[in-house]
Amino acid sequence: MTKSDKVLIFDTTLRDGEQSPGASLNMQEKLQAARQLAELGVDVIEAGFPVSSPGDFEAVRRIAKEVKGPEICGLSRAVKGDIDACWNAVKPAKKPRIHTFIATSDLHIERKLKMTRSQVLERAVEAVRYAKKFTNNVEFSAEDAVRSDFGYLCQVVEAVIDAGATTVNIPDTVGYAIPLEYGDMIRRLIQRVPNVHKAVISVHCHNDLGLAVANSLAAVAAGARQVECTVNGIGERAGNASLEELVMALKTRRDLFGIGTGIRTQEIAKASRLVSKLTGMVVQPNKAIVGTNAFAHSSGIHQDGVIKYRTTYEIMNPEDVGIEESTLLLTARSGRNGVNNRLKHLGYHISAKALEKLFEEFKALADKKKYVFDDDLIALVEEEGRSQTETYSLVYLNTSSGTGVVPTATIRVQKKDEVLQEAACGDGPVDAAYRAIDKITGVKPKLLDYTLRSVSSGKDAQGEVLVKVEHGGMIVSGKGTSTDIIEASAKAYLNALNKIAASSSRPSKAGTVKERI
Image (cartoon, rainbow, N blue to C red; front, side, top):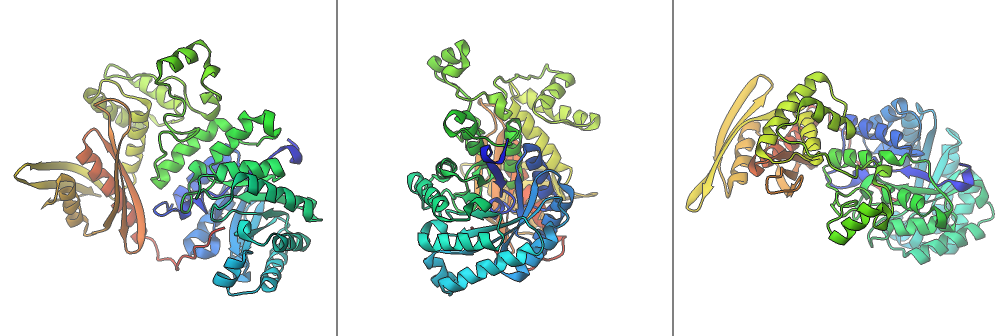
């Protein structure tokens, strides 16, 4: 595609997306996600906010050094120290980008920055010029652009383009805009700024009113040629524009927009599952494109229509986003080859040794269930992957509870070569199990959230428990699966404590600077 008939996809999952409470990723998780984003074909990966902490700096630097294909971008405030840190982090990349920002709305200028319009304009120009000394690829964002005075915003945009900005972002920082209004704003800005042809106009929309994708599409129709988004729409507050929804809307309605992206859409479902797994943020079943119900049909009329001709009730081919139309039902009579073939079909390639261990777990699960579905298999793979890297692993669990009985739990946990056991009472079997685990680990985090859901369908489905805990100012999530929900609860809690243990073993980091655009 030429520049005029392509929308650049700027993925900020690892920066804005990771700012979601509890979604913090470690170094290896960031690298894993970045490699999948490269496979997906995004044009730009905003890998983090380098000055915010030594850990974030190193993560951006490693991604810049090791991930090939997309431009690698770091965020910086309009401050020389931020820009220095950003450049030092992204400069190993073949295509580095510095992204600097400052607010332009009077509300932010007066209440947050304690500056004047002229001071902000001067700071913006200085920041772009300074960043330009390191690279020609400089992006400027006017934070809270939607609530800025339009004439002043145009003045800032013209000035930063003159200073050398090659991309100018017009964000809806607080999700305030309406599509008709936002599209018109982008259209008028393009018409009014005389040097706008020298830069790519970008948009970054938040979802506070549920309109992030609609606003982004309205901006594309008005002439914006970069969209900033995240996988699964994760991000601060209500999140960001969803990458998969934007991409598939442009692809499905090419007749209307006349423009596309360079995304390899068959990688979308895989990217969605990976981000969900790494962050612990579950994708709602009715989520467009990647939800478990997105290509499901329960109505008899719909089923009949799809069987006769798929497009009667499906406007997209599920295979185009990496989702299979049909589900292979595996049972206790299935062999290793059947399981392995299905895993490969789902995008998992595992060693012969790992397959043997997984097959044992599959057989045990198949004996408890009539059918083993794709989601059950994926849960087994993820559970096995977690167990191989965790400090604590569950060996034994026994609970008792009932009317007139004090709930108790006995827990046995393996820590390297040591087996530890404790018992405790609680308000219920899950609470008792968590108290016993606290005794074993010596860590007593605050439980912020507990969620239980069914991994697949049927009365014998596996239960998946997601927990969010806080310890020492750090919020982490944990996940566990089992046909026994008490066991799943214990595994999820241990998974979260393992993350705390892993973090405690790393060198302490400087205070985190959290800014958003």
